[in-house]
Length: 352
Image (cartoon, rainbow, N blue to C red; front, side):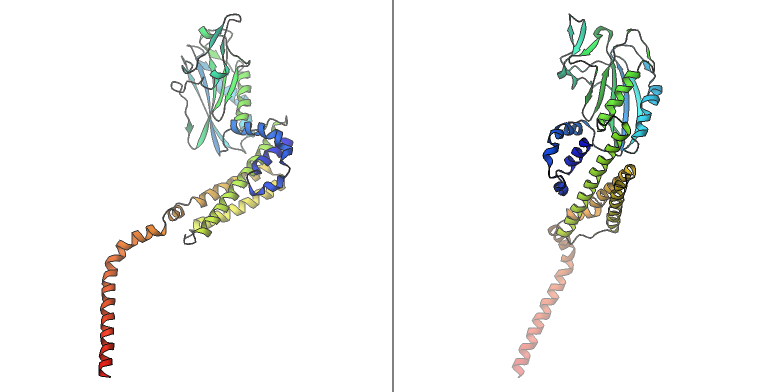
C-alpha cells in the first residue's frame, strides 16, 4: 500500500492535484526506487508483442519446446495481464549467433575455468547487426526475451556479479543457459522451466508491475490503479490544453467530431472515477483508456491542427490573389462614382 501511495504521489507531483500530497517527504525514500521501476518499464501501450528467441553460439541446440513451455508458464500471466494490455507472441531460433563484437568480453578465468561477462558488457551483449530482432510489430512495442546458449568453446559462461540473466530497460530480457551436455540438440519444456519462470519475472518488470505485495492479483490491481490514474491525468491535461487553445484562438471552427470526442472523454472520465470508487479497477482502466484515446483524437483533429498552423497573415496572403481581380474593378467604379458625385455637387452650387 505504501509503494502504491508513493507511486500515485509521483504521478501527481507535476499535476494540478499536487496539493493532494502535501507531505511528499513521507515518500521521498521510495521515489528513487519507483523512478528506477518506471525507467526500466516500457511506456504504457494498448498492446505489446512478445518475441521469445533462442540464440545458440554453435550448432546446438537447434530447437526448443517453447510452445508447451509458454502455454504452461507465460499464457496464465498474459491472461492475468489482459486487462492492462493485449499481447501477441512469436518465437524464433538462430544458430551460430555470435555475441556482439562491440564488447570486450567474455574473458576466461583460469582458476574457475569459466568465461565471464563483466557488468560493462551486458548493455552491448546483443548483436543487433546479426540477430533478427524486430524493433516493433504493428502499433505495439516489441518485448524481446532472449535465451542465449554459448558456443561450446565458451562454456560455461557466467556473469561477474553472479546470476545468469539481466534486463535491458525498455527493450527486453536476456538469459544465459549452459547445457549439461554440449551435444544437446533439443531443449524440452522441463529443461527450460527455470528459463520461463525468469522470463515471467522479467516480463512483469518490463511492464512495470510492482514488486509487492506477494499476491500477483494484488500487484496487478495496483498496476491497474496506477495506469488508470496516469490515463485520467493525461486525458484531463489534454482536455485542458484543448480548452486553452480554443480560448486563445477563438476564430478556430470546432468540428462536430471534436465536440463528440470531448463528450465521450468527459463521460468516460466520470465512468473511470466511479468505477475506481466502487473497486472495479478493470472497468476503471477500460474507461480511462477510452477517455485518453478520445482526448488525443479531439486535440489532434486534422482540420483543427491545420487551422492552428494557418495564421491570419497566411489567410490574407492566400485570399488577396483571389480577390484582387474582383477588387480592382470595384475600386475603379467606386472612384468613378465618387468623382461623379463631387461633380454633381459642384454643378448644383454654381446653379444656386
